[in-house]
Length: 256
Image (cartoon, rainbow, N blue to C red):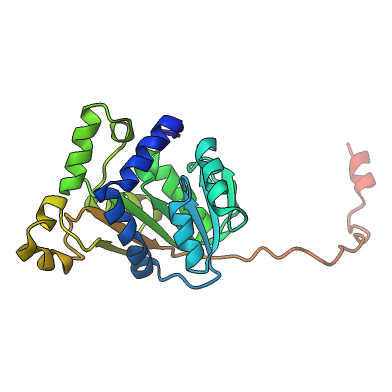
């Protein structure tokens, strides 16, 4: 189940979202979603760990059929206040999704996998309910921001002290364990660490390094592949009454 955000943790997350790091990442998430998921209007998307709905608003703007879950009742309440009837929201666990197989086209984890006790099980559940792609967005553990967040966690910052950290190779390994040889695509946001951004001569070169594996925010998607995919069609014709059996059951029962 992992860390469930209460009011204090939610406030810490809100403060982080308003920071330079948080605003930079939020501004880049939509770009990553477009490049790695290529969503089409009216496709069904599930945001696992939707929080207060920051990214649900992006999906809604893109014209998707939006649903979100979160283990925190506090965060679901905040998301409902922001989005109203524009999406479907419910409290649920990432490791045990209350949905049918292939119920969604796309499933996303954005700053969620880091707070789960069992990321592998959560990915397997996401693959079960996704028919097209699963997307993961995390703060890159090999970036300057990743080191900074871990240091803050060591100092007791509640938002980071309970968080796992991931890099490209760790996520690729997790996806292989969850989905086998599924095709994978990845990219980092087009920015360098915050202290490098201030050095103007280098800023332009960092902006072109989408596949620089040490960028501050990492997005990776896996395309679901199925050897057999079924459509569950309800039976609409009533079965006829069974004919007389070829063997007399009563006769068999009377035999010694």
